[in-house]
Structure formats: structure tokens, C-alpha cells
Length: 354
Image 1: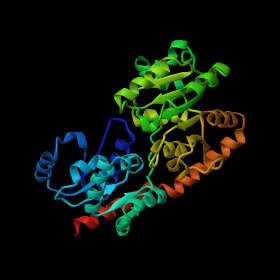
Image 2: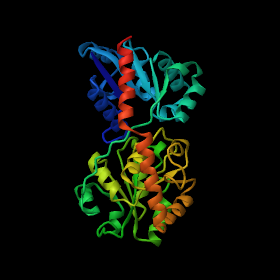
Image 3: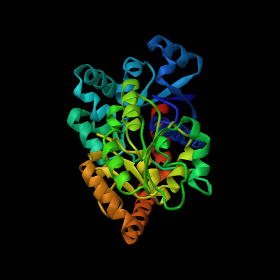
Image 4: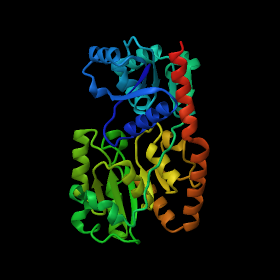
């Protein structure tokens, strides 16, 4: 018996990281599991053929809207993992809401990353309370001991865009303060939000450098981001990079930044916290659910507040030490990979035994 794990798996995206981590956990728990991207199927008929050819007995879909097109009328029992944009964005569109409602109603189980996400889901579908489970995202990191920033960035120099033209990345050293923004280039992640004010700050303090890294997930928005970065100084755009290099870059960064309009539960934030790197994040519900301001990270409500909090962190070594220690304790306590593995293995087993 085989389980199909279905998600929108753009290379180096957070969805792919989550899907692959869950697939690995299911395999290690004794379940044969195949991970597929929704774009691998042209439609329902192609999915049915794949199910038949691979003895699929259970499906787990990540993101109720993106996988709903394929799962709504699927004859194989399935469960859903709410991703974030499904509840935060897609519910505002009537057609999308109708699709998700039909899919949620047929799902055998529903997984939320936090109690806040569960509350969102129950406001929309109060009748599904008995099949909702809370399972925070687990964290796996793969950093290596690369000696310096230049060593990490060298393989990606050819693809750099932005402030390399002003020369600020030509002589990276221990005094460089890298702020790392990990996000797909799409509106919900709002990578443009901090660009202008960070560029102004770089003109005042040439030590600070903002590196944006992630895949192009919306062509029009990616073009806007690139255009804005080309007009700024102190900002560098990198293509998506493998997890090992990304986590090593996190370790060499002064802080990891999140500027999203909405989040389910940011894997990049949790990875930074696990690695002992400070996080400065936009004060939205998904971020505030895992960050307590000035205890496990810093939250900001405007670009001006971001610069203020970043300067505070630069000037206060004790604050940096305190929040990173508390953040690591928080992740170890609440985002255990072993607990995540047990939850998903239990849910899949319960479906297969029905």
C-alpha cells in the first residue's frame, strides 16, 4: 500500500521542504510514500491513472486550495494539511472558497500548524472540529562549516542581481552584517516591502547588506522585485539555493528577516531559530504565533520599525544572546521532528486501516 503526498513543489520552496520532510518521516515510519507536484498531473483523469498504476491507497495534500482541484472528486481517501495561503488568501475568492469547502468536507483528517490556524479553519467550517489536528512544523537543518560569506556566495556570483553593481559585495568580511530574507518572489511574501528603507540605511551604514534568496513563483511580481533591486544599493538578489547552502548562509548572517503579508508557519523562521540566528519578522498573525517580541525574536509593524529593531539588535549583544537562546529552546520544545513524524504516521495509519 502506497501513500501519495501531493503539493505544489517549486524547487527550493518552503512547500517542497515541508513535503519532503513529511515524506521522509512517513518512509522512516514504515509507510511507502511517493511525493508528486500538482503540476505533474494535467487533470483528474491523469491522477486516477497514477493512482491505479501505483497502488495508491491514501493521499495527503498540502494546501487545501492548490490540491483541491485534484482531490475534490478523488475516490481514494485523503487528508489535508493547511499551508497558509489557502486560509489567509484563497478564502477571499468565492470560487476558491467553494472548492476548498468541497475538499475539506471529504477529507478524512485536517492538519493545522498552530491553534491560530485551527481557529481560522473552524470559523470557516465549524462542523469539521472532530477531524482537525494541530501539528506544528518540525525543523531539520543542514548547515556546514564554510569559512566565510564569500565562500558561500561564490558559486552563485554569476546569478547575482542588484547591489553587486555598487561594489558592496566585492569585499565581504567579518564586519559585514547580512540580513537574509528567504522568500519566494510573489506578492504574499512582499519582498519589496523593505527594499527602499534598507537601501537608505545602507547609505548610512555600509556594513549592512540585505540578501534576498528564493524562487520566482510569480513572474510579474518577480520582475517588479528585480526592477526595484536594480534601483537600490546594499541589496543582493540570489537564485534559490540548496538547503545545505541556505542554512550555512543563515549561520553566517546577522539576522534572518521575514516581510510577508501572511504566513501559515514560516519554515525559514523556524530554521533560523534552530540555528541560533536572530529573527526580525513582520508582525502578522502567523509570525506572532511563533515569535514573542524581544524574547524569541523581534517583530515590526512598518519598514521604519524594522530599521529601528535591527539597529537595536546591532547595538545590544546581550539582547542577541538572550533571544537566540530562548528561540532555540522554543524550537526544541515545540517543533520536534519526532513528534511531527509520529503525528503523520498515526494519521496515515488510521486512514489505511479504515
